[in-house]
Image (tube, rainbow, N blue to C red; front, side, top):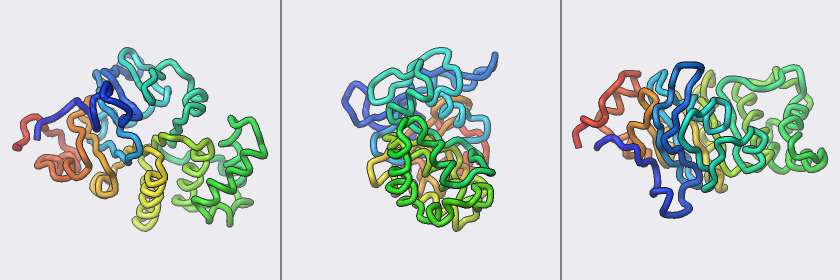
Length: 262
């Protein structure tokens, strides 16, 4: 199978199956360029996983989408609109949410207070509290059980649930999530992956980066392989798993996907 820059799903001119498209995006930090005319699409209502070796530009791509990295050229289209110059609060209002890598909670605050902070942009405390009950606590009953506990006392898996539950308060149509399984036990990894599948099944588009590539692709609809700041492959998750050279990539090696045998 040859490498592709065409992305998952149809060409953007063909209709609405794509919820997100990066079009020749160039981005980086300071004078260092990380993304080199990165082009890829993300299919609406699907769970898509980005894999690739360290330094491939995976996290930079998600940060560029969510306005956390300066994009030097190119376009980022969300539901057909160029959102490149929008602030993060505006992206949240438009239906995009981001759960970054690592722990992003306030450990000394209660679980409930952490969730309430996530709903500040709603501008309505009662609406926020209602959504905490109907969304966050519904997704994660353990958070309701521990609503008055300090967030720092939660297990690693529970803290990740808190982060996702907080992001879902704004009812996003697109959830970006970076390395959701990092630091979790195999049992908790299974739980988190199951949650992401459940979100997908409710209509939320999920785009995640995951170090546990094989297991992530096994529960995904589509897969994107990044190498050296470019999209090397974008196919169904099963096609990515079946690719004759992807195993080398799982082990962190650089491979030339263009030269792979059909």
